[in-house]
Length: 364
Image (cartoon, rainbow, N blue to C red; front, top):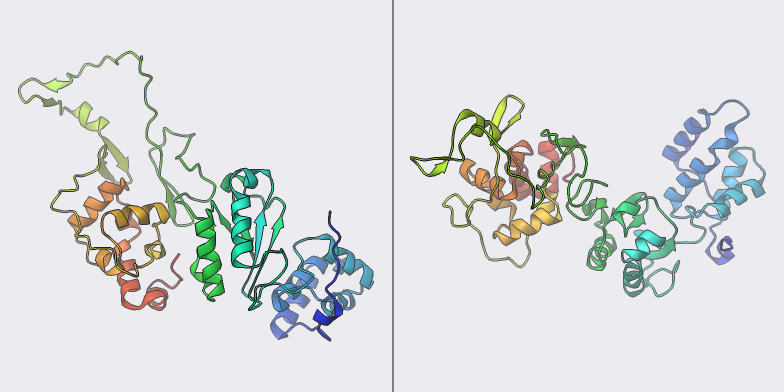
């Protein structure tokens, strides 16, 4: 483990005190612990000091020691042991912690480190010219299945490519880090399998978590040499030369969802279908369609391939157009459930401010 020391005196401020909000929070936090055990609040107080100042200063350590009636050396031991505490000034807008442990390294962490060296500074813990960005390599941050990943403040950004990290760094540098959605930067829900579910595959009910839907996987394919199942129903109607449409066949081609019965879609609708929404040439500045809840990077790319680049396009979709896109994406009604049209209307009208006004929360 590397030696961790406090920053040189030239960087140290002359004093420290919690602001009014944090002082009230600190007092309430200390009261959570039994009498005589208040020193257990040392880590949360140091973390709150770091959040207020951007890093843990010598004055902050002394302040926390006095507030908890602890020897200064005990608080210093905590601050220098845990690498979550920054002991020298870091970027005011972002300090990028790149996981370099084996799973992330095997999945491209070295390329992410090259991005940090190129866009921030060649050396870790050194700030860029403006003092707004810095970076370091850290050990496992617990998102191995989503490797490679970085942490910025309290948020994890996972399943990264070098290009995606460059974009994230640029957004933070521009003071717009809140525009970037934390979590996986690919079209999957948290740590769900990237290729679809691998267990509970007989369930026909979509899984919903944090207002997002995890689509169930397709039924496993039968082996090539599997015997053909024997059924009582004929394969085709001899008169019409089309698949049989008796009740058994109809039941096999439908699925139940709540009180509704929807036809199961096996193929994408034709691109020549009259109900396909009109596309446009790629504009110079496409809208960020990922702001619509239910649209991830993969779906956004698919929409782009259809010529859908602007919120105002989605805002004008009629029922037939929504059903066409729904079928093309194999979403089984998700567009209407997540109300893409209403979201798109709000974003087209007034961006994030209008979205908050309509939905009472920020877009994803």
